[in-house]
Image (cartoon, rainbow, N blue to C red):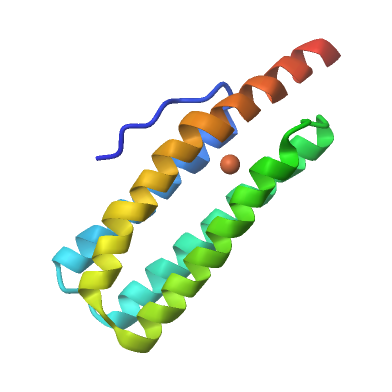
Length: 134
Ligand SMILES: [Fe+2]
């Protein structure tokens, strides 16, 4: 179970819940010794979800001219590049232990830290900007 805070924007909370469910689903598939093709599909889904979720956040940051958006986007870009590389590594070597270690450790740690810092601050800013406009 990942312990992460809710942020002041519902669409981001929904995306975060989906990310957590996709990660948990992958760990369950590893426990169940699911076939490689099933894991491939779930990993592709995780990458696709993450790309979409990041793009949505970045669109909102642009619309509200969030000043530190390059920093936030920079972390998104680094995470997407790393995720794509880890998935490619899995597809080449099929090392289940490495995949599990990555999902349990770095992916979980990154997610909790990112939500608690960048997403939390960003969502607060966007929410405040919306309040100003209406
Ligand atoms: Fe983010």
